[in-house]
Length: 288
Length: 49
Image 1 (cartoon, each protein chain N blue to C red):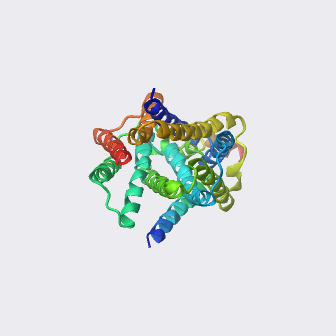
Image 2: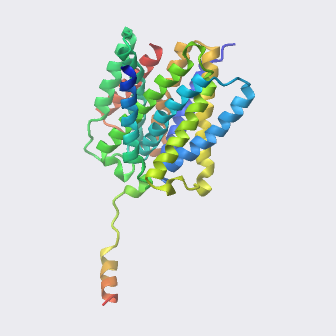
């Protein structure tokens, strides 16, 4: 039996749920605290997975992973802060549009993306423009700061850029059997923790304080995120990569559904169309 | 050449993180709330002379 489809779907669900609860925790704790401790907890899970896999590290793969982690560490804290400050149903799909970055990187290196990728980029950008249009009435479910959509949109777009760069560098680390994917991810996790610590040192050291009784939910977010990575990696080896990629890329759908269900978030007609277009674009890019 | 663009993009993300992430207040603390209720403020002023 082919487990690719259920595993791919599970990875998308795990990513989306981890993002939702990451945003929820960032409404109670500093986003930097949530990002750091969840990444650390997920890192411990990754160490266990590495020990179980018995694969050997490759210096080139780890080096690319270290560069990738600089992007993902910054992206994660921006993403959590955006989810905490803004409307999750908007921030999650916009951030997922980081899938556009590898297409742009391919263009820069002289590669010509296919029609599907071009269509995906167009749909994603149109979706972002539509969801960015301000809504006049207050949005239920969002925090009181949700009205300051300009800053939130910048955070969502910057996190999209960071996640997109992460894809580019991880791809560089794993292409041509240069690096075992798990070790590339481990390198990325190490440098993202370093970057988050540096941001705290530059800004406010108290951001890395122990989250106290919230350590349980915060750790679960990181473990859920790492679990999703492992599910996706396993799905990709057992199933059709194109199908698994699309299923995994639909993770913002889980965040949007949870935000509607648990927070009662509602969007305008145009914004709903934008979310649908952005998600379609992400799916098309994953399939390209 | 393309590496320069990728590094520049990475720098933009870093700067954005430094701009927004060093703010350690949790999201909910950004809600505008009246710090002191008018009646209480008056009472404090009276008490303070």
